Length: 257
Image (cartoon, rainbow, N blue to C red; front, side):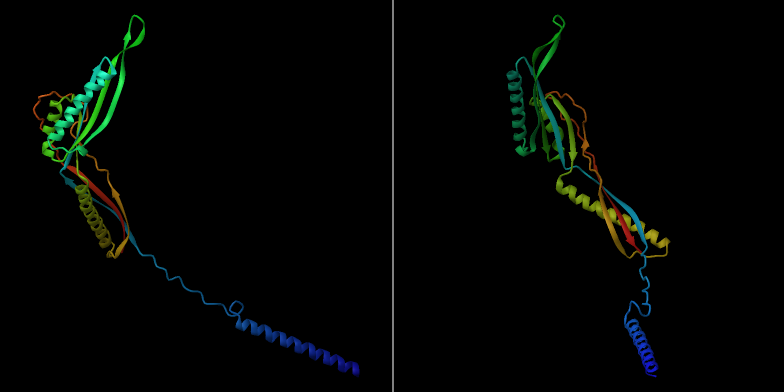
């Protein structure tokens, strides 16, 4: 009798423990987001904004504002000192004449100065022998009045220069920068015009600019003479036409529409 009561109490205790365990697990599940009901999944609301990529180019023709004249004095003598002395004397005369004509010292620049021995072939000995020395001194002068380019060349020749290697027509820095900005405005206007055409065809309207890349095309000065030309003193000023130079800018633009 006592044994049966003990067994029944033991069974009731076991059932009670099972009930408590089930209630505890249910409570944990109910209050735990990870173990409870499935969490709502957020919908992907990201939308892709259509874009159009176009290019635009702006070109402006501008008249040169400066001329750079490259010239030289070549002397050949039996000794190095004689070749150098004669060359320096002639070049000093030229620079003095340029300064007297109103050209500033900072606009006269030496670009080359070489003194080298000259050899000839001796048929009797079958060897090269020293025959003298050659001196070559080159300079570049910047002329800020284009109309004075021709007479400046004549001035250089009249005072002893025997080579003129070229006249380069360029644009001064301030004018070049202003022209680039104007060309850039044209390039942006060209790009927008193209983008508007594409957007209209797609039934859209341009909203804004996403990115802009600016490309600066190479600016090339105009060379009046490319090859070395021997000039004669006392010659009349050569007719020099500066023409025009092209300054070009381009852009790559991505628009949102």
